[in-house]
Structures are given as C-alpha cells and as structure tokens.
Length: 449
Image (cartoon, rainbow, N blue to C red; front, top):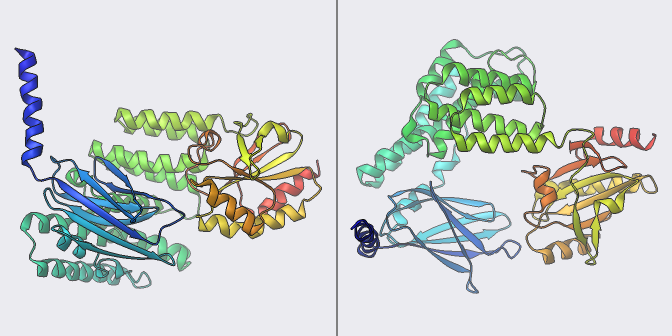
C-alpha cells in the first residue's frame, strides 16, 4: 500500500511537469573567448550548464516547478542579470568585442530582461567627495529615478514590489563605502563619519532574512559590516579591521541566518588571503557565531589546508607537463629556490606581471633559483600558442583546471605566487608579485645565503 502511495506521488510530480509549460533558455554567443563553449544559468538553488554548438548556440530547459526569480547568465567571466519566468521562453544574444559586452533578448521573457539590462541601472556612481548630506541625497534621488523607470514599465505588482527592494539595496550598497573613500581616497587623516551617519546606515540596511538570496542585499550587508569595522580605526591594519567586523557581527546582528552568512564571508575571505595569520582567534569567533553545519565544515576544511602551508612545512608536490610534453616534478628542482607563478593566458593581471617576471628571470640568470609558471588554462592548445608566440622564459608548465597542487595551495585568485626553499619547503605560500620591490629584496637575501 505504501509503495503504491509513493508511486502515485512520483507520477503526479512527473505529470505536473508535463502540464506546466517548460521554461527554455536559448543562448547565442558572438565573439568566443579562447574557444570556451560552456554557458550557464545560475539560479538561487541550481546551476544549469550547456555547451555551444557549431552555430555558437545552446539551449537549457529549466526545472518546471521553479518560481519566477532573478538569475545570472554567465559565459567565461561575463555575467548578465536575467529574470526567469515559468513557461516563458527566453533568448539571450551576447556579443563580445574588445572586452566590451552587448546583450539583447527575445522571446516571451524578453521585456523584464531588457529592463534589467538597461544601462541606466548601471550608469550611476556616487560623488563621494561631497558631504554626508550630499551623498545621502544623491542616492535618494537615484533610487527615485530608478523606481520611476520601473513604474513606467507597468509590470505586474509581484515583480515590481520585488524589484523595488532590489533597487533599494543596489543603490544604498554604495553608502557604507563613504567613510572609507573619505579616509583613503581623499586621504583625510583622522576623518570619522558622524553618529547620525551610522544610525542612518543601520536604518537603510536592516536585517531582512527574506532577502538573503538577493545578491544586492548581500552586498549591502557586507558593506555595512565593513563600514562599522572601519569606524574608529585609525590605521590600515587588516587584522584589526577584521576583528572589529567580527565583534560587530557578534554583538549587533540578531538574525542567526544573517550572522552565519556575514561571519562566514568575512572570515573565509581573510583566511583564504592570509592563511594562518591569527587563525586561532578567528576560529574561536567563527565557532561562537556560526551555527550552519555545512558552513562550519567547509571553513574547518579550509583552515586545515592552511595549517599545512605555514613556513617551513614541506610543499605539496606537482607533476605537470612542459611545452614539449615532458613531465616535470617539483623534486626535479631540488637544490634550488623555486619561485612559482600560478596564472592563465586570459587573466589580465597575470599578463601585466609578465614583463616584471621576465626581468626577474634575467636578473637571477645563473643564480641558484628557478622560475616556474603553472598555467590554469582550460585549453592546453591556447596556452601552448601563447607561450610560443610570446617566447615566455622560465619553466613553463601546464596545470589545467582542478590541478591538485593549485588546490592544495588554496588558490582562489590569480596571479598567485609561491616561494619554496632548496629542499622543497615553504618560504611563502602567498609570495609578493614580481612587480613588488619587496620581491627582489627577498630573493637577494636568499641567494646570498
């Protein structure tokens, strides 16, 4: 009897999908980047991925039971905000030329997506050089302008109400940045925003658990915490800045859901960058505040990885192939200091470091140090062509995506540089870039040993 009941439930779910019109998203890309054919639609709970065919098109069929909601169309680092509605098909036409993006839409779902990608929504940048009253007034005027554009579209109230919330946090996410701009960009020594300013911040960006899936609200919350972390801080000290943010979350945030999100975000970002720096105190704050088991597990895993990367620990090993297809292992480089560059051909900051890296290679030619570049490019052929065309020096290796060495060093952003000693032990798991004058100071001190 129970089995029959389960079968009936499953059958009803399947037939419901057939009764509900499917939601199809068709994508067209012009101006492919490094032959990358993967395109995705990212919803609040799923990632749908397809691959472009020979006509540079792809089709995705989304879950028939999902509600109308915001999503993101992504192609190779290019993100386009979209709104997906059940039963309404959508076509996305993306053109990329000289790193400039042009997007247009067709299909039943086009009107709201054309609105979301209206340049007016992205044109504004606040004048942080004004006073507190001026910045608040300019943001208020911008919110009214965007709300007026939305009202003129005459969309149904369910979308309009949701969109006005998004507009509010899209606009007021800028406000918490005002004190930082005054202190550092305008270099106003000793500047402090007024108590009224911080009171207004808390009122304009309140705790709203129902909006926690909205990226604009998440950004506003994070900026709010950063502003309170900066309050009263008279020096640029990343640890003190983080500690003040953690103390604010611990003492002021009431919602456990929001506390989990904020504490996880700011501490994870710091640990990914700084590793074991003040790790014991960070872990204590984290576990005192975060209750979500999956977040705690992921954070603890990250900390365990970094504990293995402290100075003096044996480095994780790599085995990669060079431009000729020969395997090169870390052990092959024993007896020399090793300066490692994790990079990719598509990464602009990586390529910007290339001339400085070449200068280092020439400067230390004949010295007891080897320069190794490990590429994270998905396509080996593109890497090979770039290395040969640019005649890159040093040991050029192809790591590819998901390389165990890169994962072991918790590489989240590139370029990333690593320095090892002559026995393969870690000197710096996050070494300075070639363009940083401190790099030469460190390398000079090593070769003089």
